[in-house]
Length: 113
View 1 (cartoon, rainbow, N blue to C red):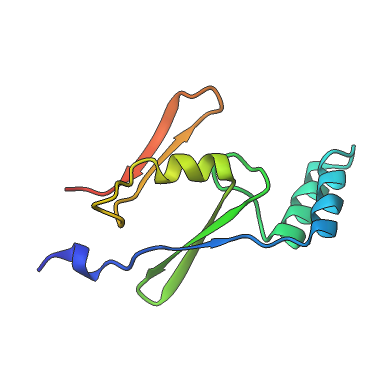
View 2 (tube, rainbow, N blue to C red; view 1 turned 90 degrees about the vertical axis):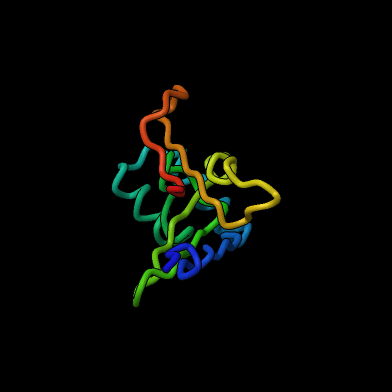
């Protein structure tokens, strides 16, 4: 049996943050408060941070895995890297490349053929 037929496509949604809340979050992130306070504000206002770089997320990618749903958040820059491996003929192909901030590849996750 082909396991690819049983895999669900990820659901991609935009993160919706009220402009006033986004301004408030940016003020907190640019303030001198502790990292803990910044992370708490990011969680409360944006639901979390980009899973690659830790910045404010723009997209949520949700996967259904058995009885659970996995949600990953990405900023636009990291999301572009995530969809880099997709082509027009194969929309379910997924490629995610994580870097360490200096464009040195530290991890790659993709489809196995």
